[in-house]
Length: 185
Image (cartoon, rainbow, N blue to C red; front, side, top):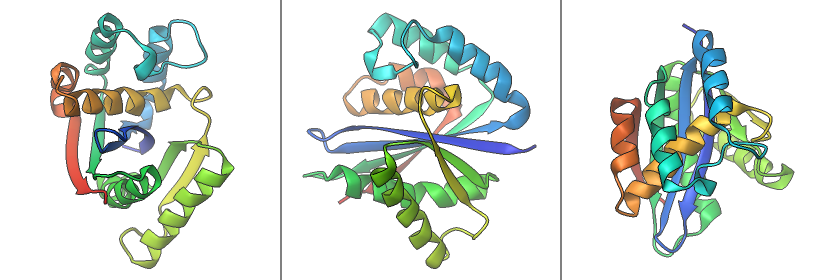
């Protein structure tokens, strides 16, 4: 099995919650999942959880629950919350989990060159601290260019909905989502 990891985030600064998810997929399963995600897209350049109405979210969560994937969900909490600090804390927790699961490449949705550089700095710090090995590589791509990035977006949205009191989407994902909580302050 050759695992690929794709990550995205979602957050609510007012609630003080930052969610970063890595979806781990066996490369052999990637094309059928890409095709299914593409079929779920209704217009627009990408499938984006936060722009979907509740009835569509139910459908999307149901389809997503059938994928052969493992979703590592890091939920960072802080009050008040600084989004970049929370992201760094969540990424520091996520990277060792991704490597321990067997993936050496993590594809993050690009957040523009300046922010991608901040993520690269976090990766470098994790390597210096030996939290991850030198084998781990992080790359960036546009969310509309890689449908596999839509999967962690869906899982992040489900986890954020749970933090807001609506657990039904996360419950549909059942064992496919493993939550880790971190202090993001």
